[in-house]
Image 1 (cartoon, helix red, strand yellow):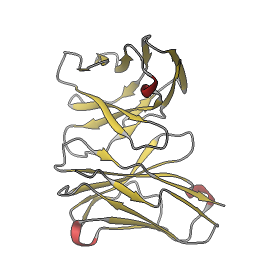
Image 2 (cartoon, chains in turn green, blue; image 1 turned 180 degrees about the vertical axis):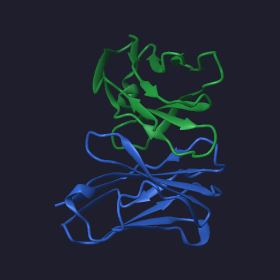
Image 3 (cartoon, chains in turn cyan, red; image 1 turned 60 degrees about the horizontal axis):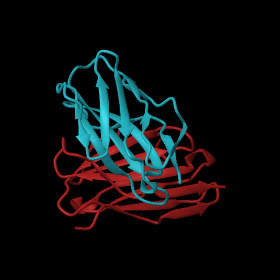
Length: 115
Length: 113
C-alpha cells in the first residue's frame, strides 16, 4: 500500500523568506502523480502544484516549486518570498496514474508566517 | 464558476443520532469523491462516484455510513447512528474526468458528543 509521510507537523517562516516543507512517500509503482494541496483557515483546500513521476523536471508555479527526488521518494515544497496569505495547512498527496485514482494524503504541515 | 460546496459547514450531534452531509460538485463533473480527516491524522479516502454509480467504496469504515448520488448531481453522506470516532472533517471533491485534478470543497466539520 502507498503511504505518504509529512514529518513536520508545524513550521514557521518570516515573511519574505523561504521555507521548505518535507514529504516522503512509499510506493512500488513507477507511474504516479504527486500533489501539494493548501488549506487556509476556514477555507477550502486548493491545489498548489503537481508533479508527474515520469517527468524529471521539477514543477514550479510562481513562488512555489518542488524538489522531486524519485529514487529517494521525496517530494518537498519550497515557498519563496513567503507572504501572509501562505499561512495554511499543507498536505502532500499521491495518486496512481492508472487503476485507482483516489488520493493518498500525508498528515499535513501547518505553516505560520511571521510578520 | 462555482466551486465544490458542502453543507453544513459544521455539525454537532450526540452519539446515536443521525447526520446527513451534502456535497454539490462543480457543474459537469462526473466524478465525486468523499474523504475524511480525523483530528491530527491524514485525510483518508472514503468513496468515489462516477455519475450516480459507486466506483470504489473501499474506504467506507462500516455500514453506518451510506453515500448516495441520485441523478448523478449532488451527493449525500449519511452517518447512522453516529459514534464518537466519526468526529472529523469530511471533504468532498470532484473532477471532470477520472485523471483530472480533484477540486475540493471546504469540508464539513462533524463533532459527535
